Amino acid sequence: MTVPDKSLMTLRPEGLYCPTGDFFVDPVVPVDRAVITHGHADHARAGHRWVAATSQTLDIMAIRYGRNFAGTVVPLSCGRPLDLSGIEMSLHPAGHVLGSAQVRISDGRRVTVVSGDYKRQSDPTCAPFEVVPCDIFVTEATFALPVFRHPSPESEIRKLLQSMELFSGRTHLVGAYSLGKAQRVIALLREAGYDKTIYMHGALEKLTNYYQSQNIDLGPVGLIDLKVGDYAGELVLCPPGQLSTPWSRRFADPVTAFASGWARVRARARQRGAELPLVISDHAGWDDLCRTVRETGAREIWVTHGAEEALVHWCKNVGLRAFPLNLVGYGEDDDSNP
Image (cartoon, rainbow, N blue to C red):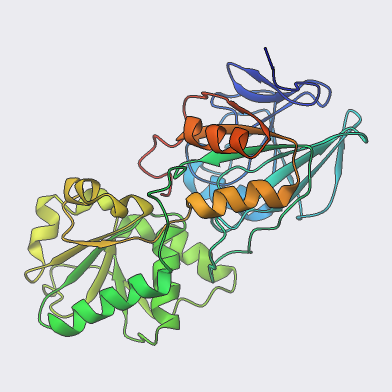
């Protein structure tokens, strides 16, 4: 029976582990040494004794968990190697959200790359994905089914703007996750020429302010104050969970939208209380997952948190060794960012 090559990385209950370097990547519980790929709560947890990540990911963790979220923090620039007990570890852009990174791990003979979450579509709010050649590629599989072929985000933004023009007297209420999605939607609207103030729920404020502090121009944004009106004709962003609450019904006959890769599945959009699905994903779709696997040149693929079996099957059909990891604890948090 074919088994995965665990000479550089292995699996433990805490998550992916590098025995020689003695560190975990995105562990699901507090550990002594952790390398964190990005700031979403299903990957970045508080309580580690030592954490390495990009400076932006560390800032985001501090915003979410408080300044004392870890014992020692080590900010790393992408491409700068760090020696961990003879293992060379470096971070490389993942294109998922601001500060997101893949983790390259090498003992001088072999290279493993852990993707974390990633996307290949353009995003004005974060550095684009960088293909990192490797022997073993550990890839996410959130949308690893052929049905998930994401449209261009620009076309989805045009749908939103057309709806705003058609229903100009109604509030357009867009459900978007607080880290990454909300800021990307705002930036895409600005690229499309929308220059009015974009209003947002208070839950989005801190991270949006942080994005702006990183020289990401989001234009005029403001907080909602329902005491001053019902925001007729305006665009409002909120956490997806707010779309089906009494709060959403205080606006002017709102058109509810849901910005997510899951909006491709209309039942998921309806579950969120959305009538206007916007298929804008911060994860790679099927074609981009397959393309990325090929471009890394990896001979062995480990597939995690998502539709693992479908991507494993595809890999084997094109002659690659591939294994599902069946890790738990990822992609289940409401603030992960589909």
